[in-house]
Length: 162
Ligand code: FES
Image (tube, rainbow, N blue to C red; front, top):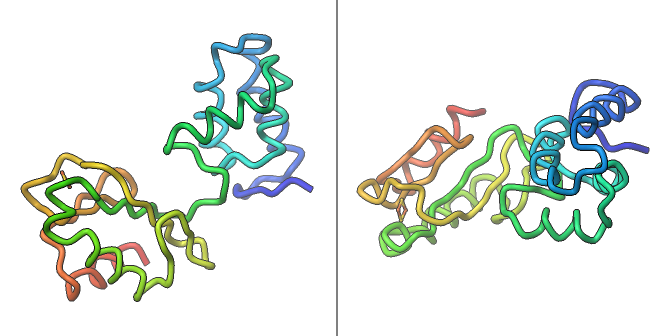
């Protein structure tokens, strides 16, 4: 059974993935592009997606798995609707990455790499997000930077995405 993060049917999802693969069929050089589009389509990269891509591009399953696990951008597990990326770069680390992670763990009961049971949030720890002057900082959904975080400010930030 296909695990589907989308709201479209499983057969339709397989067909759509085939369409993603088609321009790169038999071309191993298209692996990263196909994985990127596949993750956009399915939400993550489960085994059935890896197999379909490996067969389509003519690469081994191990190679597909190796690329997925090499790049932090790719995920083998379902992600939440909102991605919370807590910066663990030097400036943020010194000013309170641990405090931010601990506060989020107390609020959402998840650690980096985990998703809340309601699929609302996925928590990640990342390198510098380019907002060192706002340390400690986090970025949500890859676009919303929240900085100068303190424990009592974090609930209100998360509430914006509830
Ligand atoms: S170290 Fe956190 S934004 Fe640069």
